[in-house]
Image (tube, rainbow, N blue to C red; front, side, top):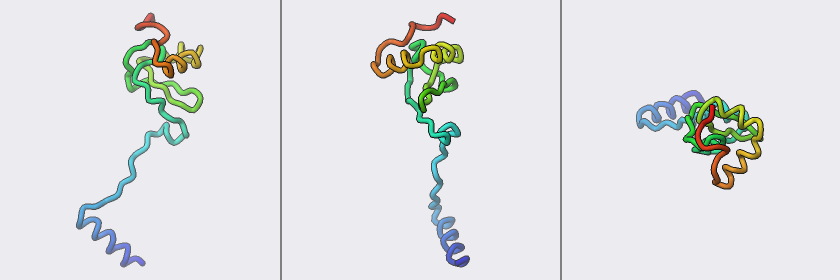
Length: 95
């Protein structure tokens, strides 16, 4: 058994063929699914890629940390606007 494993490993090294599983983000391990939005549901601005909020098993991207508070006040409103493709809660920031 050990010699077979050693042979397989040597062949893999010799041919350069390795199967490496794709890395999953840490938040994905919790079963939360990324919503995939590219526009902040609160401000309508482009998302930052650094700020997120979780609701209903989904992870929504935000443009800044200030929008999290507004999103949490009425998440269903902002989620519905994303689903409809309509305008976000307010144009730009008022923070």
